[in-house]
Length: 178
Image (tube, rainbow, N blue to C red; front, side, top):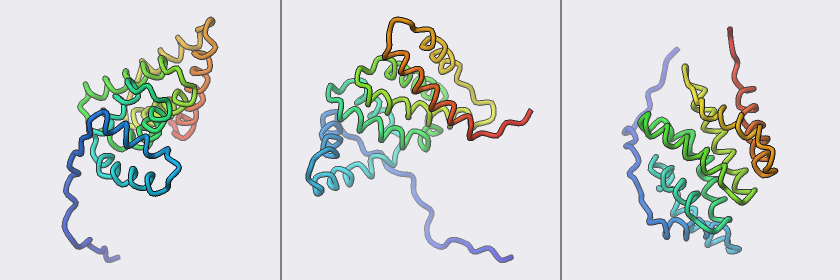
């Protein structure tokens, strides 16, 4: 069998595109406009930004600090889409920080829709973490345990069920051999 070589130059690593918090919030808000041209403009501005792993930190910052629920939801959806491909680009210490930060944001998010988006981010991250041989995330299981015992807050119980459902779907896709 003859293999074909790819012709052309190797792809250069993506250059980081940075936005200020206000710029990123404005672009994310564009994605919810009623005008298709405005939405396409926002998507075009985000394309180079989302190619570099630094977008993860900026999207988490929006999740943590933006008062607008719609913008936070957009940030969560983009984070869910990109965290799996960019997570390995971070150092181990940065990875641990990202995991802890996502769990913290998920527990403190007041908007149910945003919280569900963050749960999706956590589940996608769990898929990456546990998909690596020897991958571990004890804080995720500790969070599930604590939330499961939360008797006073229906919102935290709902978070626990959503998180448990998403994580169990991730584990069902793995094949374990003992």
